[in-house]
Image (cartoon, rainbow, N blue to C red):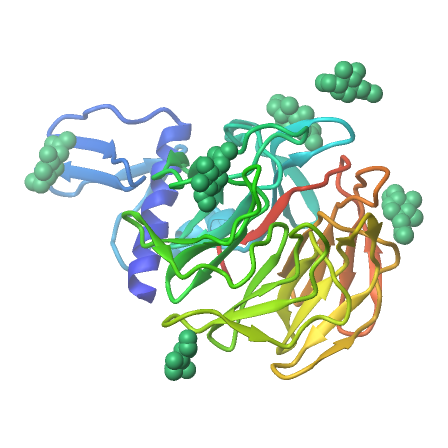
Length: 353
Ligand SMILES: *[C@@H]1O[C@H](CO)[C@@H](O)[C@H](O)[C@H]1NC(C)=O
Ligand SMILES: *[C@@H]1O[C@H](CO)[C@@H](O)[C@H](O)[C@H]1NC(C)=O
Ligand SMILES: *[C@@H]1O[C@H](CO)[C@@H](O)[C@H](O)[C@H]1NC(C)=O
Ligand SMILES: *[C@@H]1O[C@H](CO)[C@@H](O)[C@H](O)[C@H]1NC(C)=O
Ligand SMILES: *[C@@H]1O[C@H](CO)[C@@H](O)[C@H](O)[C@H]1NC(C)=O
Ligand SMILES: *[C@@H]1O[C@H](CO)[C@@H](O)[C@H](O)[C@H]1NC(C)=O
């Protein structure tokens, strides 16, 4: 597995660079192509073939080039924080922003198509998958599934039913879509195995804006909205059906959820029009309140990055904001904000550490 992902990254590293420099032509006795998977193929009948990347001679000794490529292209190997799409103060955006070494980069050649808010994003099999969503202003949802690696975007099989405000997780090496809304509130669950979408067991309760997280090899779906804010939690172990898990202490939809320091952290959210600053922590048996956020906030991105829980952007009922706030297990700290306000976004750390 490690070998496979290594080779994979090596290939897309080279492919990206060759694409950037516009190489791709057939050289004497050699063919260079990038296939639909983003893999670079070099066929040659000659001996002593050399590969030049951005004018530098890369000695293409498979198995010995990783350290060289790491030095040339650190962003291919170093996990960075990505903020995808969402809404600014007034409209839907398709931006893809990357934070590495303290600097936000706007990946202008990698905008999200269609531009979307209230979609899901997660890293699945070495690509960033984006699923569903809709425009910020109420509009029909999308069935779009698109995946990204540094070579570019690729369209995947669309969802069987368009929806927004889904839960999106990778569970037992499958991509799971839980709940969501399409005009109706949905209990449906679908999973993608890399080839096709198949139905999974429906949730016990229809819900959208629920948080979803994998913890102790179980998939949890937490809170959300039906016709009111929910505090209920459901759990699935990969076979059979969903079961009730201990309920949150307060109802919350559009909260963030991540596994951090061995527990599930559920941060902020909104219930019945009131935005929340509170945080709840689940240890597998009970929920307890943790250190609250400095301000009420829902519809934000939440990731674990460089050993910290990071809340990115969000909405408080009045406006979207750019705040980036980190939690180290003891206290929340305000960090350098996003260059722009952003809510209903999805954030991932990629490549996965
Ligand atoms: C490269 O080699 C493979 C295997 O022989 C072949 O299928 C493929 O068509 C070749 N590609 C080019 C561009 O020549
Ligand atoms: C917000 O967007 C709407 C629709 O696109 C537009 O009519 C309006 O002028 C915008 N308001 C501001 C403050 O930009
Ligand atoms: C990023 O680039 C896109 C495309 O040029 C642009 O529309 C967008 O406003 C930029 N976003 C930020 C945050 O600068
Ligand atoms: C929403 O999804 C349900 C399936 O659960 C489907 O029956 C219904 O037609 C969909 N509604 C719209 C407006 O697409
Ligand atoms: C998974 O949950 C089902 C109930 O839906 C139960 O019958 C089964 O024993 C559980 N499996 C494991 C391994 O816990
Ligand atoms: C949110 O960010 C703004 C702009 O950076 C800052 O003025 C404000 O203090 C931050 N909010 C909190 C609660 O720290």
